[in-house]
Length: 175
Ligand code: ADP
Image 1 (tube, protein in one colour):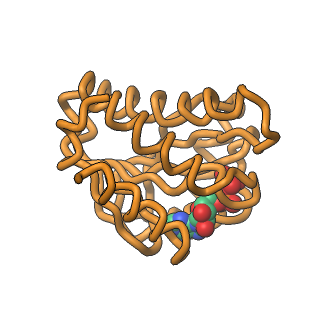
Image 2 (image 1 turned 90 degrees about the vertical axis):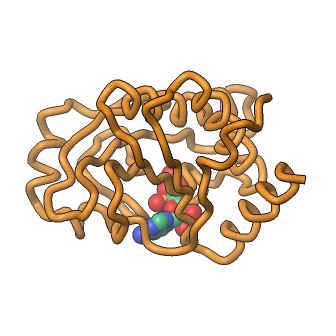
Image 3 (image 1 turned 60 degrees about the horizontal axis):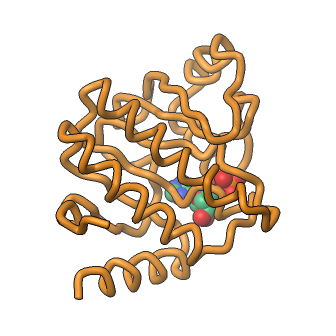
């Protein structure tokens, strides 16, 4: 895997709803009509216009992604993706990787230069953190070599343990 785009990856700790980027990614569910965790926080911050736009999208399959406006968020867009519910099956890593691929593909085709991801599937969907971190970073690095529009990818981590797993992983890659 090429590490040449590592300098485009930023690891931060905090609330993704507060970021001024072109797009934030929502770890949504198949209905796209809101839920708990980061999904609830994004809908709360974006305001009721977001769910109105989402209603017209007819949901989203697991591993796929769909884009909406950002409404009252500082981010111009929200890219909604649905991560796998962790089961230990060999499909889990492939499906989680497809979430990152599809979000970054949408970014590339919509002139999105800065994008922020939460730790997809790492909350109620139960994905083991270090496995999910590796998939997130490696898939993003692979995609960045095909997505020259994208200048910065922020991984916005909410919890101390998720943040330290990402920081440690990136630091070992930089060695
Ligand atoms: P999933 O259903 O995909 O597991 P969750 O929302 O339950 O989604 O959790 C995904 C990750 O998002 C978890 O690591 C959780 O700590 C984190 N998270 C929750 N709220 C926020 C927020 N406001 N900003 C960034 N990350 C958040």
